[in-house]
Length: 206
Image (cartoon, rainbow, N blue to C red; front, side, top):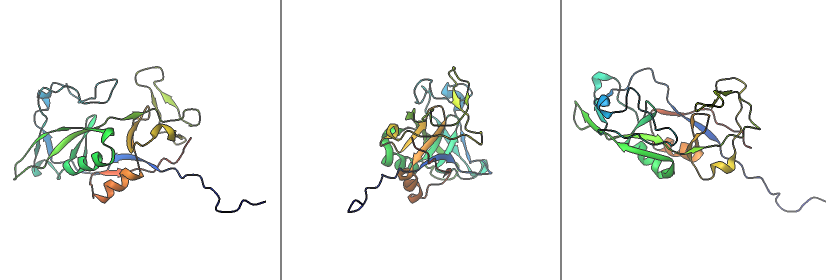
């Protein structure tokens, strides 16, 4: 006998997107003037073990100049971090304050007032991949550099939805990718942010 009424439907899982730099062919018109004085060596890395900014000897100082290249976008990769505009910072904080961290830079321009820019890090890292249900090759297994081979054409990653919870943006452990949900994508699109794109969605759930 058929059950009367509206049949219960399984809740539809939200899509997850790769949170990536937009494809551009020209360099941004800025330069970190005092990079050598920051005291971090040749590359600015997050300290090992937990995402954060390393101790810096000076405040990062950006020179923004048209002679150096195109106007900087809202989201620019910078070593192990990103440089983001004030409005990009506002969007990220409004959607998921606990997942991000910022360090304000000093900025100057050769032409008028310089826009505000911040060093940005995605500090939330989740062990979100269901290894038993996924299909991938592990690189550097058993070392501090363990990671999933995401370049193989047959790689398939199944996400554990219960691990994500209410997070809207995070780093997927061992996948070395920043991932966001539909809410974050919609907020960035609504704000008209430039310099980022949302890669093909991950749609596999455990």
